[in-house]
Length: 132
Image (cartoon, rainbow, N blue to C red):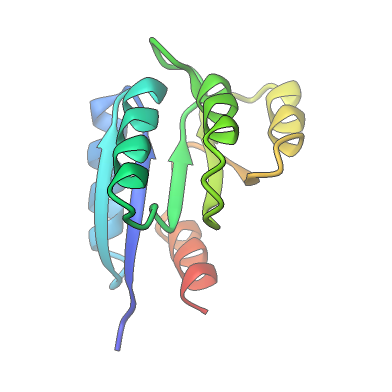
């Protein structure tokens, strides 16, 4: 049986969200994808899940440059939530700045940095890592 994966995408670009959704559909995995267009909406969403004692997503893909609360600010807010749930988080960015890649490594919650565009093979690798 194919495991169901809960995916949260935090990205302010509707085109990127659309592309990720299409890639998800091609992975063969059963995925419940939720997209939030900035870090604050994502924090609100996770806070709501926490208050209802529901599980957090298995995987979160976080864009860096967004309005309201950017990717780094989202991570700061997330670490203050004391969620205690294991989530695979990856920065997903078009940034080619080495300092962004290095900064991602300073967060214990972030497992890696993925440069856009996200490939189907890379997403399958992430899903495989969760389901095993």
